[in-house]
Length: 282
Image 1 (cartoon, rainbow, N blue to C red):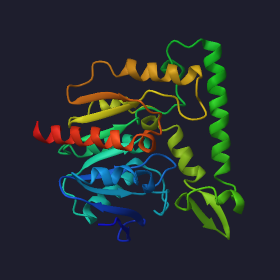
Image 2 (tube, rainbow, N blue to C red):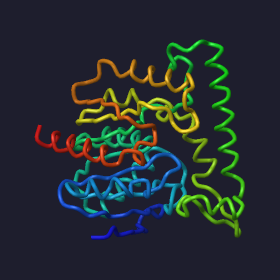
Image 3 (cartoon, rainbow, N blue to C red):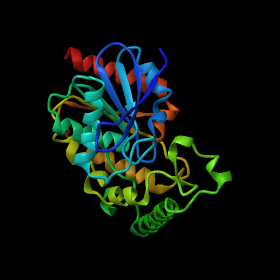
Image 4 (tube, one colour):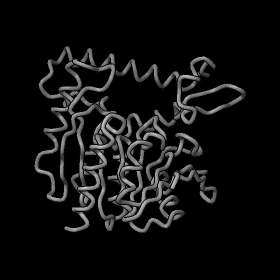
């Protein structure tokens, strides 16, 4: 059966979702910051062999409506999708920002059967103490450069995209105002997330989640940051802070970058299916 696109209109904002159907326990997939539900196009059909799979555009992304980025409101969006599709205690699988939301969902819904967090524990722009083993001056320079890059990206969200450049972006990642194309999410959404404590470090949330949780870490640098010291130090910091986790949490590393959903959909689908099956049996 072909995936079905649906817009939920009986909510505070419109929510765009795609039903990949499938038999078995329900799974809701959540994309990362700046992504859309299309990020799951390769992985979702593989997961649908064993599960009922629904994906959605987060607020301010894709074809979903705009609204202030407040964690409770976003969790309310997820609940609206779960209710619309009658998912009945779905597992939540999230990449990056979506993985952080999976943690928050589990805290709000202690009866959640399981969650999967795909490299969504900590923003790369972080406190100096989260980059162990890197010389102070080199770290300062790298963080200053990263901050400037993110500042420039945020500023770009407020500017119209020339038509020839807009053609290079997925149509779903753009919005039109006054005849001009703009990238989503807005600079307001980026600002609300960038310095939010939960976005900067979700590891404290992981420590208090009570349902089974799988964390999949990237072991390679993201594109554009290859070979530098910063990401290697960042990964050391995450590994350091994942010691002594509750027994309900499983951590594994994948031969991929942060863009793992696009790079390794088959391996991730297998990992997720095995984990969710084992969680249900255990």
